[in-house]
Length: 255
Image (cartoon, rainbow, N blue to C red; front, side, top):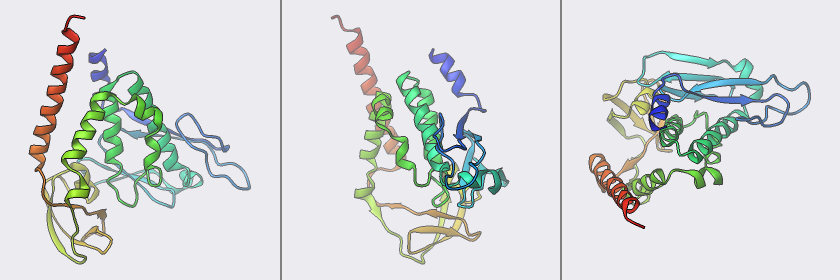
């Protein structure tokens, strides 16, 4: 089973199906389309790649994507026409589709698939003001998703938050500051139109937004103190490895 799931998750074409209904009722993985007077909008179904894409959703109802790592090409997924009638419902539909698959994968104990879905979720939060989950971020974490979340992922998330708690290491960059930063994360680099490890010159606004010379905008966070990234990963790996060893010993112990 594990081998089959690993092979499935490794498929580069895996996608999240998002359904937007036209008649006012939520779909299997979607939310209701725009209401109001007049004819109901036509149903719409989208396939969102679970890896290798960073999506940008604009208020006009258009959806674009950048490759991760960037190829320099902006892909138009849906123009404003077909998606415009559903523009209010779209983020909720994405959240509903993701919630449904997280629940199913968690209930079946498909850890690799849960990880892939969560990686997709985290990547799509990178575009600060134009995320396709804008306004629906919390809807992914329903009670059933949390109750069925694999134990090791709950432990991993808890330990990670303790090792890098933003409340204890948060700092602010003065508005108007000129920064020269190295973009190490592929998603953040792609959002600003760069390949990883490229140096970016940018300015910070009063709302902690990082604006580069092309006008691309992302939220800027700064942490001071604590463990560096490599040490955080080492500690997390040690905790998870120790937990796994103790669970194996308990399973092998005579009743």
